[in-house]
Image (cartoon, rainbow, N blue to C red; front, side, top):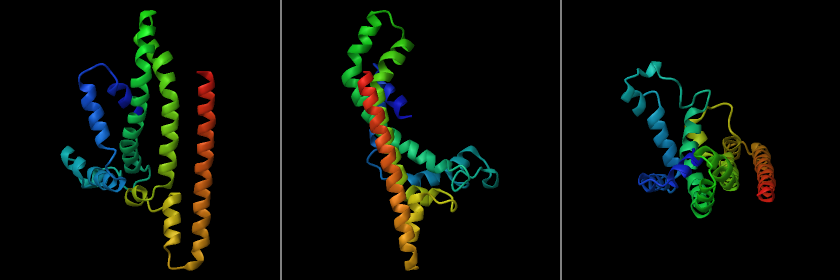
Length: 202
């Protein structure tokens, strides 16, 4: 989603500025507010079900359901704007001259996208994907508000164990937090390795 927004925002059309502005407006909105809005939108008695005229008993469990639809939708909505801003910044500063050169050499629209635009966007896209994953891994509020009660994401499990009245659960909370941090570190290291490989290939 972020890549599509970046491509649309950097396109040479009049509405691209409007699209870029709308995408940027979602960045300062806190995830807690976004989660509450997504819950009001996708709940069985929410705005979307009423707009479509679907009975609440027939509405699929998008909030708190088995597939975590509301949680994924909220993170996709919020993080795609962050990805779009970073990728659009890279493309607006680097891609124009390369795309024009490829067009002069006879490359079609899809060839320019595949061989010029996507390789230029790949490092920024990989970096923002890693940042978004690490943030989502450690985020608590969205999964706690919109997700299932079981199984719990690592951040929710760590918070619940740490705030438990049973002080014996504190070591378990610390173990979950350390596991989360190690998993995030592994993802960051893999992303850095992939970015270095991309830099060598370019």
